[in-house]
Length: 364
Image (cartoon, rainbow, N blue to C red):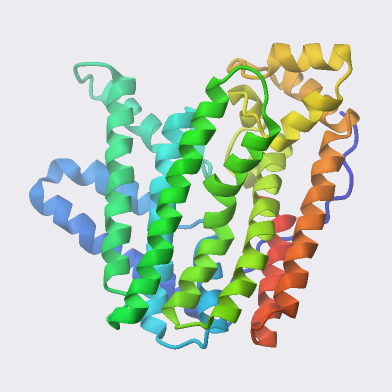
């Protein structure tokens, strides 16, 4: 395969300099354990559900929690317990989004393990239950995602007791949830439509992932600490471009990532035929032979490793990969410049700049 350019990969940094992220981990574990016990009190038959939720809640990059904590610090770091609850609530919301997204994308693995719908379909087959195993798995996954969504709201509701601040926090959280759902639908619609529409793909990138990964967690943290409008404005100018850089990197990893690091088979996005910015850039630049190859293989669930390598070559040889890498660099620089010049403490600006560089060049 054609050699890839040096992408300056870095490991994702944490926001745990003061132990706050570890506190989020503990809060999440305790809260999930309490809610799982409620299910087990209903019936021991729910044990597989509780095991799956606890498995999903363990680990991950905790990016949204990290940005929430940085947003809280930049706003004055007032009310640590509320910030911990808010960051943990974000992680539960993220779990809900992942479980539902895996169903819609027919993904088989997540973080190196079977996705929820695949695990419950396998359980149906192992126990020789009646009905369709795939339908059973999908139903179980939808309920697990809904549980995580419900629990995230429960956790956030206890985060703030001051009425004015609670209104600001709910405003950020509610907008984030609505925009993510809007982005998910637009993504599903774009995949179903024939042809390509670069503008719509960029819209999906922004609302399905970019804003809820960086901008909204930052704004939530700011709202939790009562940040002023100047600080929130700096978060917006930083969050949107850095969030887009994050998603573009995710698109690259979906094609070129190491399965041992990403937890997903290489080329999964190609098998699903995802109309990412990377793929659309290749289609725009492809010659006749390259375009024919793309059209033949994109969206083929039985795509072989050899075919994946051929498509990777096209993405490199057309200059699509280099173009996306350039966009990632530009967007990251734009975000870093905005936060450094913004009305936030220097330590927070530095921490956010380092985190932006980490996620723009992450390995998983």
